[in-house]
Length: 431
Image 1: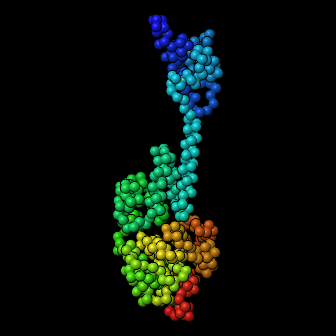
Image 2: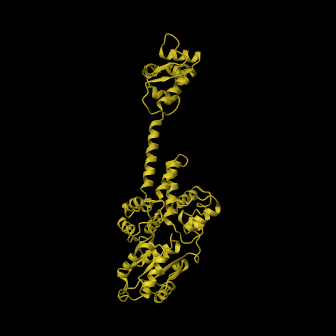
Image 3: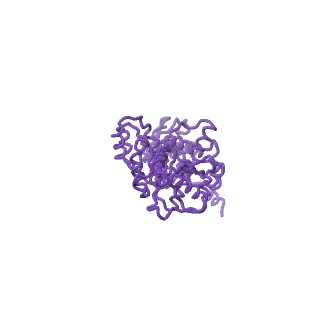
């Protein structure tokens, strides 16, 4: 190879050398930026350009005089000059000289689509459909925006939060044990101050209609209310009429109290270690009624005594013992029927119990509420009303009347329902 051939092989063609002039660098960077917008481009405005840069632009475009310091260049004219010099297009040239051309508009559309998909997924999640009170929490998550600007990171965090909420109340585990079991061994994922802990506690505050916790003590109290770190003795559930079969401690304690016409206070320890346990064959179709208030259980025991139908009381928000017992009964073939107060919190408790245990509502429709209001025209305001998943009209009816009807005011109706399921000798009036 001759010296001339070597020079030709290493040096760019004259047209390429013109395009690569340092004075044209502002032109290519501006064109690159405009093309990367993802929008149609017909002209680009440059500047301010110094005199050498203006001379280079005039040479490139074949102008007979220097352009203005802030010239506006037609992309079609630039395309002609570039093609004539190099045989390439403007996008090819700026890609070679500056870098790959982006698509900011397309990227924004993609990000908008990702955000829309994320929030639609959250709004339609099973947990939110089962417990509509979490819609307020979901709205606050959306208002807070994406974690680190990433829809993927946000979805991962929300997925973990929803997994935690679905598992509550827990099995009386310490928080690190609960977190490790649920979150792939990450024992500290729910430690105080972590993003996931903050997100879950905000959801629990929404659920219990409480202010977001501000101190470590308030956060611990909220976890305890949700059943995390409940000890096996302080978490109890009161039952009546549970005539269970088996030699396990749970069955014997419940059966002895039932035969005495008394309520049994079962601890979480009883429920977690039930031993041999079954529902009596004579109990068909294995219906267990569940109420919110202990006074209803007391009235039922007073009326039915040892013949009281199976009845479980959650005593307001159910703790770990209540939820675990109800799940245990369902596992043994029981069908649960739940009734609670007709107020904002009562509806949220009902939705919670139905979601966590598979119970069905018992006299909790809009029609039942209207009947109760007709007999009790005065009462306190129901408070914050959220949707009842089992009857969309119930929240509307409660908002329309603005009256809370506590469970005790419909006790007679509930007791008549229980009488229909009681043993025959009770139906004749035996107490």
